Length: 169
Image (cartoon, rainbow, N blue to C red; front, side, top):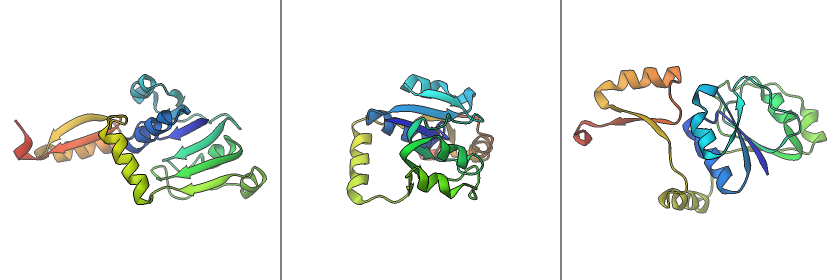
């Protein structure tokens, strides 16, 4: 299957890309080009962040972004496609044409809560290192303001980690 993941350079997006690749999908990661190296190394194709995805090209869209572009992401789905959302960093309110959903027999999913057995499977995947969180930067806890500024500025792909004083060398 062909899968589009928006916000692919963030922590959730990187995990979604890795999970889709583990399932054998052909993945297109939508993100800023400056943060795409890690995704390319994983085997994902890259779609620049502000680009419109090609129409009727994907079996599934995993949308972490929301906001503007919602209709373009629906249009990127093939008939019978699936759209899942688990975030709204681009804005929680969207506009779309309902006819695209029912005329193309699309299925929409909210993806925040999963049954215990799904979570247990995810933990197994993590514990066997088949999915590896991308940590781009660590900060001593005293540098929390800098970490927050870097997060807000979107300076790094993946996760930023604060290290408590007793864990620091």
